[in-house]
Length: 396
Image 1 (cartoon, rainbow, N blue to C red):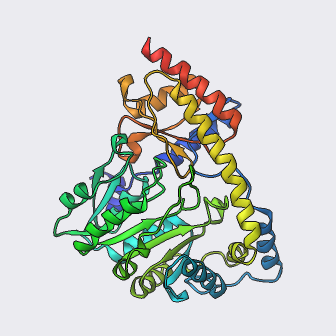
Image 2 (spheres, one colour):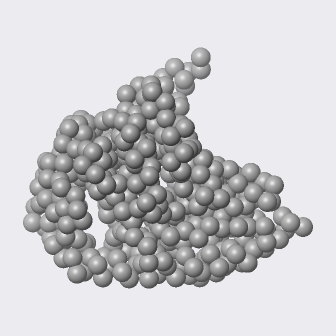
Image 3 (tube, rainbow, N blue to C red):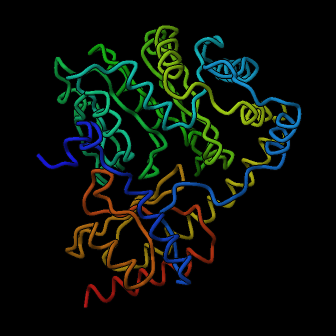
């Protein structure tokens, strides 16, 4: 046994670093060195946080809101979140709401609160890179079900039913999806939820991109489908993607009282509470709804234009095919025709053309790459030109 392995825990030895953050870090390092990098790796809006949210936070800071807050979040924010969910058809109280340091922590605590060692968790692939690692940190066993571009990256009820075993405890759903941008229709989600509930599963519904949808589509929450679903679905969302607040680290969770209480207890022993004055910034979203709607609408205009611009550029490149996503801010083109692994493809693309993309293998889907269009129009135009040149070289 090496000295390193003797001091590190099993968890630390087995955890994989985030490949999306690694790509972003390398791209930023190249930019810092003066390179003209076209970055498509970052999973965050390139806009600033809306001014009214920053102002509310600054006012709270100036007013002395700098002390510990309740673990689950300040009551006005939890009540505002409960009210917002109830307006959509939920029936929740503030004690079913937990505000955590980021949507990532909300997901992780939900898994820790429900998954015991040996429990299996079904994760549709392509998947967000952190889901499997979270399950492993809880002692659970991730089970992957691949849904490729032939099905619009969507899991079928038949796939789900065949994968359930006596050890299956939890199903993870993410719509709109990171990394594909795929959006399940209500009928498609209902069919999956019916299978899961018949098997007695819990469902983690990650809805962090719920407001970033296009083509006249809408997202929906599985917790609304029935009273049983309301008890067995854990709904996770947050402010990061909707209001460009990634650095604020503020995720939300809504669940049955027993699960929400367990999540709050876990949080009390790990991170305590979300930064107190930051919560007042988030509260402004509900206190000033007109400004919130206007800020979101403006970002959606830009995202939709960029989505279509990037998609159009990709569709002109021989050898690449790309599903038309309807949510989030990602496209997930198929690059399998070039005969390279997705990791090699992305490494060569960055080295030769200074275009940063994330390999599909990071998301459990070889033969694809993830491109984020949360970037400037000029970057999209230049980046697709470079990608086309790179693919032409590969094709000879």
